[in-house]
Image (tube, rainbow, N blue to C red; front, side):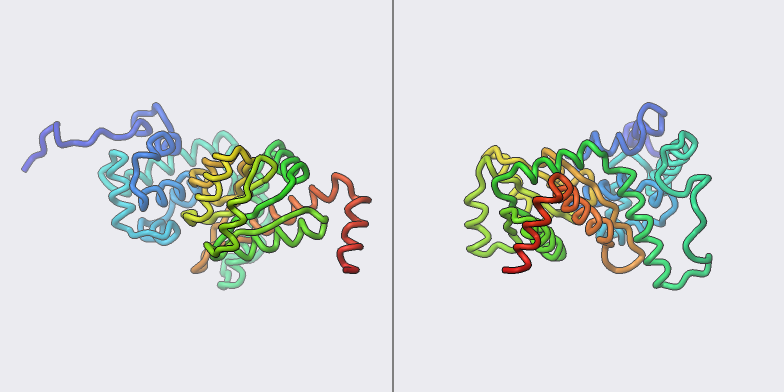
Length: 295
């Protein structure tokens, strides 16, 4: 039966040339369901990949189902995923033509390995690209603001659960080497909750998040905001709720061909932040590190 005009969903602005797909998704982000937000975040941050992935591959990378990807496409006003992908390709091509695309442009260095890469080499190449993409997207002003916040804080509280707990602990270790007061919240234990309860205006709360943020990290950021503490987030999704609750935001790329996200760029950011703090007064911090090691 022929559909009437009333049943046809209007295409998004991108299809009419008024707005890019990324901008359209960001404008409507709060309307989406929880699973659709996972898809939205991945598309906005990985447009170059979405332009050439299948719906199944996109679903795997966004930790959701292919049916969710299709429903998300329809929620935007497309007939299905192929039409959304076409809009993604058009936006990506315009970025390449304008010289603003992050990867794969002319004049890039020779590839690390030959085309017939094995799994090990593919993973190494992905990590290399993640660090490069992260370096392109992190602004110097945001990095300087993050370093200032760490140096000026009376206490640094690093929040990261599950896979992020390791990186939270490592950042705490690097800051303690500089004799800075640093603590972590890695689980909803009584001790961790008591640390959250001591958040005040002199505290810097750092939230680490990969993909969909853990409720405990979101809670910490909301509490910090309520108590007028400074907040810093390091996330792999620019539309993450943790990022939205933060005053300072640092993005890292976590693309991976494997069954888990890549955190190579996250480790690079953590070490670079610690080195930035150290460089503010290298002589003083060198003495502190020496004293710490002698304890």
